[in-house]
Length: 356
Image 1: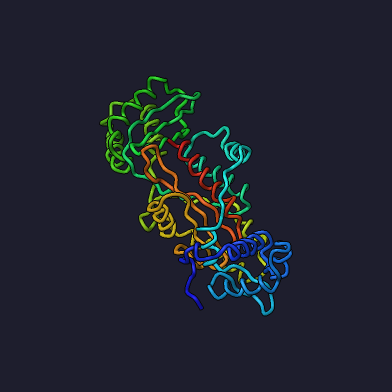
Image 2: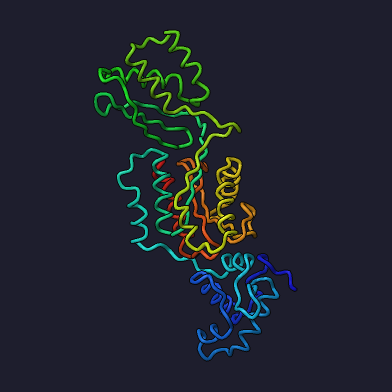
């Protein structure tokens, strides 16, 4: 058996082998079922006989790109074969205007809350791709560049925070109803003087101590606003000392084609793996060190090592081009990569624009 695997140069396949392999992959993506030489011959018209197609399929199987799930059955692409197809044969098209508008439409009316933007993005990808979607956003500890309170109505204010890495977050907080606009300005000035150039974590204890000991020259109402705003931005790390959030949507999409108990167990194990923060950071580190959309196929990938499952993921960046998270989809290895890759790419770029 030749040891081509996914590292085989696509140029080593002649035109006939490429065309046959492409038809096999297309059939697999569409139906998930093996396809035989006679069916391929019919698709090719009078160009090649079933016997000729069978010989080519035999060569591709020997090269590790195809396998026979059952004796005398048709052939399916291996994970290595899919990797080779994605890397060298697949033609990734551009999204249509309608597809772009559909994705943008999912964000209509967004309050610009970082978490809400991410939740809307995962919902959009899951709905459009028919796969499960996930987004990873570790809690950044970037120093603050600007913080401001904006009055919305009696008892409600908007806290706007801009970090030096370019992330913009808006949060609505409850404030005392009798708090005047000047009190909000005073709260903004108080926090700005202590937080700008520092992280919330660095200044939190100092500010709380100052408030508790009444060393801050603030009235009771303004002090309450400061405490509410500060609580909005501070967060506690988990037991591993890792801060961040993982949002997964559309898990049910992975169950539609499940036909065996072992498939169900594999998917359950996958989501258990995803819920661990260390795996989240591993995913982000892989996207941080590479350019563009990353594709992890079946057991042939370095991420989850789950046969039958693929992950397509891309990072999104702040205005200062710092990677601050990753978004992607999880689905069967027979997912429509040519359609999903540009969707993930566009959504990641859209998130970057919305949070900057």
